[in-house]
Image 1 (tube, rainbow, N blue to C red):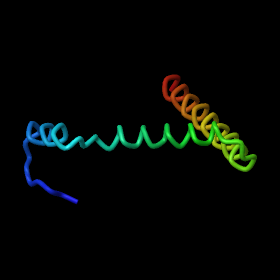
Image 2 (cartoon, rainbow, N blue to C red; image 1 turned 90 degrees about the horizontal axis):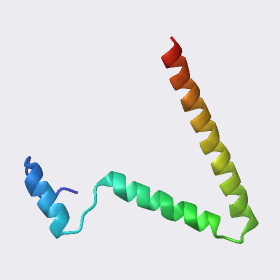
Image 3 (cartoon, rainbow, N blue to C red; image 1 turned 60 degrees about the horizontal axis):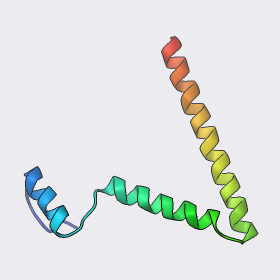
Length: 75
């Protein structure tokens, strides 16, 4: 939802400051962190399994990304 109509970055920054808006990347990082903390601190076995699967997927992603970078650097 757009409340203001401007192309000035200064006005956008001032509005973000006055109305306590955060940029989407910061909001996303906070939400992911909150989600990860909830999963890590739960006693529910189902959620603990989800955490393990999530961490495995994250590890695979990091490995594949680093391998892709290595391939690009060597070619």
